Image (cartoon, rainbow, N blue to C red; front, side):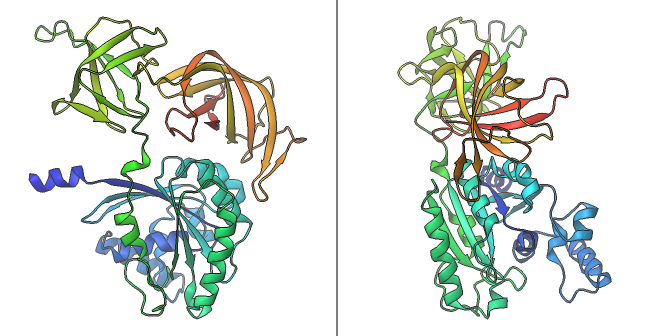
Amino acid sequence: MSEANTYLDMELLRFSTAGSVDDGKSTLIGRLLYDSKSIFEDQYEAIEQTSKKKGEEHVNLALLTDGLRSEREQGITIDVAYRYFATPKRKFIIADTPGHIQYTRNMVTGASTSNLSIILIDARKGIIEQTHRHTFIASLLGIPHVVFCINKMDLVDYDEAVFERIKKETEAFASKLDVKDVHFIPISALKGDNVVNRSENMPWYKGSTLLYLLENIHIGSDHNHIDCRFPVQYVVRPQKEEFHDYRGYAGRIAGGVFKAGDKVVALPSGFSSSIKSIDTFDGEIEEAFAPMSVTLTLEDEIDISRGDMIVRENNQPTVSQDIDLMICWMSNKPLQERGKYAIKHTSADARCVVKEVRYKMDINTLHRLEDEKEIGMNDIGRVSIRTTKPLFFDSYKRNRITGSVILIDEATHETVGAGMIL
């Protein structure tokens, strides 16, 4: 039992891969899974047979993640593929995101919850437009750690000068963006150099392998542990004799550390109270922090419902109906100025109107196109909206959970935009 508990308590790292078409994202993930012994024999045999049928020299490890038939036929990734694996040190969820420009929205979806982004660069081509695009999106989404994998080093004779040149160019571009923790690794996903095992072909590279970096990178401080934010998802009233007067507020902590006895305020009412207890499935605990899911009980009877937020008295979020966003548009129908949409923010639902489109972003040059007001599918732009009721939010840079919203088309109920609050 203790072994199972240890496994459940292991830290989870979510990471996404990005890169241009044919840069080897799926092959890299296949190599990670295969070399870290995270796939079954029959899975390997199946892709071995498929590779032979196609007349390929090597076992095509990309087939482990490209699940759609059209992906396998074209040899590209179209939708986000999620893969799960674990090593003795950590659990991992991988989002393999597509490289094409027309799938920017899929990349945003896959990367939005990631702690780390792996951006692949083909050693023969160096930095291209897509590298700029993916680095910008990683920066926009506030991904704390970015790893540039210079792939296909086997095709440039494992030349150190090629790696150093690409590294220098990438550093120059990344320095213009808000990317905090950057790493560079020369790899060959096909041959397995520096993915799980150290490369004998590149003795000049003294850094860590990709898996070692993924296992050991520090992600504990990726969450905001300063600003206490608890969006209420559900009010727990068991209505049983033994819990006759129990009233708890269940939700997932979006930031900060909550302790029993802390003075708190409920928004939007502004009534204050103290935390009586913090309850979990395994019993009562003394303190809880992001991203734990808990139930809080308070000393006083306050009217709190889903969509409200419990915060500290002296540290409160912005409360407003007027919000400025960077938005990634995901719908075939362009964003309408004066258009009305449903909006979701943490556990709160509201409606909003787009007051103004400020500018569209040219993702490749980082220029603001202030004359272009039409934001179509896969475009990113800055807009200001007004909501039907006040939302309690922080800037996305400060807190990725309380700083993000999604816009929904009220007629079709499809998610049309993902917004980062400025």
